[in-house]
Length: 336
Image (cartoon, rainbow, N blue to C red; front, top):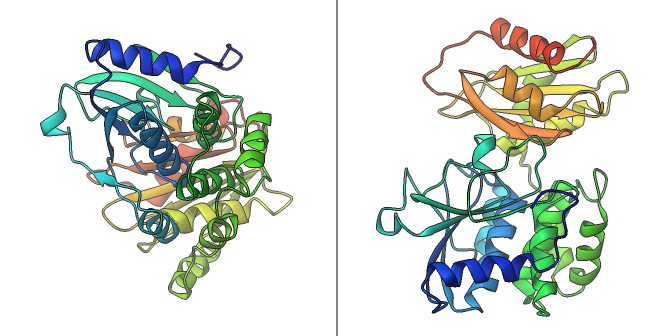
């Protein structure tokens, strides 16, 4: 199901297909997988979907690839008791189990299935293809994947418990930057239903206080290494930091009125993360990062917000990275 399609009954369709797969018994184990470097929206969506499937008698395991190095996300997972586990390659004891990818899409290179059976995709990212699997619910008219999953709870006429509602609130807050970007009706409807069910004060506090004074050197390096090219600000941070920090820096640099696209690169450590932001409708952050990282890494996201990682085996200079991003802006429709 793509944006604009009739979305009512999506969860019923998913469970009917799962029950059919399990032989009509409604019993079995499914794997729910976030995108490879999960954020709050991905973790919340996986958690809430798992708990809803369990109410239908389906056992669920939550997993992800990649690394979580966000302090606030680790805090959220710990405090809300989200059983999200990292895997390498495939889930060996459930290789044939149906895999449901949430807040990601295998066609977007950010969620390679962890079982041999891609069963479903629930996502809200644009610029993705339609995967060949039994169930898809891809709604690009939602600012967060959490809003889609909250809609599943509404469809079932169930009210999530406090921890699930808090997680969903945090997912909506993070992906819409506290309702400051790409807020859609589904996000507001979900927020209205969840606001006093969940602990919004806890969620807001954890999401907003995600930095430490130990991150100050990264801010200094980002400013020192910032360089401008037309509408774009590009900055390389020559030290190991977190994906959360570079995302915050990419958002921060976008506050300058002359800047319409920001690219911030963590250029140390085993995983060299990149965050891209855009406030120009003609310049898609997702398309820019995908083009710039072609053959040297992977990335994806939204038109206004995207992230990626450089392959650890790749050796590439700052000048070459800068050229790749300026070329990507031109190739994907940007005018410098």
